[in-house]
Image 1 (cartoon, rainbow, N blue to C red):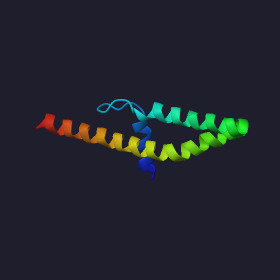
Image 2 (cartoon, rainbow, N blue to C red):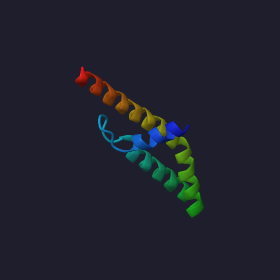
Image 3 (cartoon, helix red, strand yellow):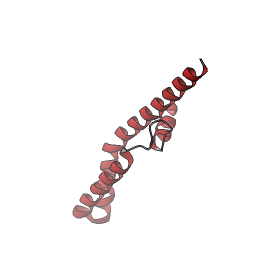
Image 4 (cartoon, rainbow, N blue to C red):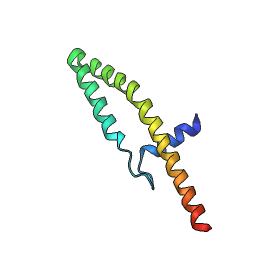
Length: 86
């Protein structure tokens, strides 16, 4: 679990071989949409609940993809190092 979270944290940022994570801005927009929808129904507390609901749906997918991106970048780095040495 600790390795997964470390890889996910690295994968959320720009990686050397795969670039920046394209899902981060999309996730932020979707969470904001959930907050806006919640705010229409319940004001400030509804906004928080809407954002929490969207985070519970979107963040697991985003973190899984981020960890996968970090591991892919690591594999590419390893393959480049092996091919350049021999």
